[in-house]
Image (tube, rainbow, N blue to C red; front, side, top):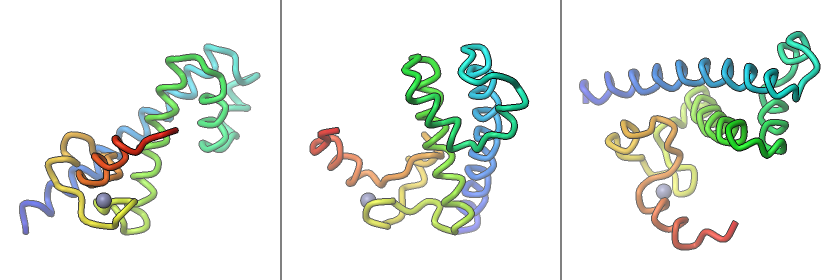
Amino acid sequence: MATSDISFDQLKQRLEQEHGLLAKELKHEMLLNTLVPSATAIESAELGELMLMAKSSFIPNLFDLAIRMEKVDAAVCSIKLGMYGFCVDCEDEIELADLQDDPAQPRCKSCRVHSRYHHNA
Ligand SMILES: [Zn+2]
């Protein structure tokens, strides 16, 4: 129990760190691609707004960045809600090994397998 608590905290730390870095990179890339008029405009914009803009730009690099940002942002939100580490679909605990592979992993193994076979987006 004690050891898994420690790694849980570490995972959360990694997530928050990645969240900060991604936000910075996303803003930087958006400025480079002139999706926003100025650095001031980007600083006053909501992160959700920026992610939407980045996704609808269809610039591959920016699109990937926004998708990752969205995933990490959702995980950071779930920490605040006390729901971190629980599957968004079935609410079972996500295995620690899976979270160590990707701290932003939102689904348990069986739901991931399920969505892979039933994915029609
Ligand atoms: Zn699940």
